[in-house]
Length: 260
Ligand SMILES: [Zn+2]
Image (cartoon, rainbow, N blue to C red; front, side):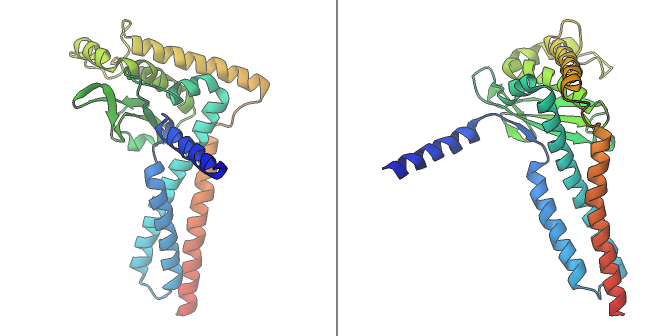
């Protein structure tokens, strides 16, 4: 009986966890495949010392691509951890965000190189009304989700706070905001102005969140110390992950020479 209760409790905890909204890493669905592919390509390089140079170069290029995906995943993990340490209250608000009907909404965050941006804005949040449910936000990650992309730069976390502000307002007010947005920005040409009219409550909350983040950061700096710079974290991750790819490639070249 005791064991059954423990099992039920465990199942309830698992179920509760899976139903809770979360801030999620936008690369998480691709990183497992990237790690597996990288591992397979590593093995292929080492077990086939007689492969042609052209094939070796192709494998090397594919390894770099997968390594870059892993870098982006790890950078996003690291920056989300830093944001939570600096602004725990703001993080918690977005981590438990509900739509107008009380349904949890997942927020998928990606820190991206400028060249990968879908729109030429340093931060962008993607909301869409779900068909047949005007209160449910959907994005490329599915129903009850929002997608946020932020450029990798030294102000990435301030930009993320700004996007969290838009998200905090829009998710529980999606249908009404959609109406306001269509009316307000129908003729606006400059994408920077969209979402930031003085009468736009989402834009106001975005500026409030960005300001609060700066206040939290100053407090964190004075009590804990200066947080590591975004570009320094990115550089270290790139160095470690790419170095292991280049080392494997160099080993493969060496073993092919000994084969000749
Ligand atoms: Zn904005």
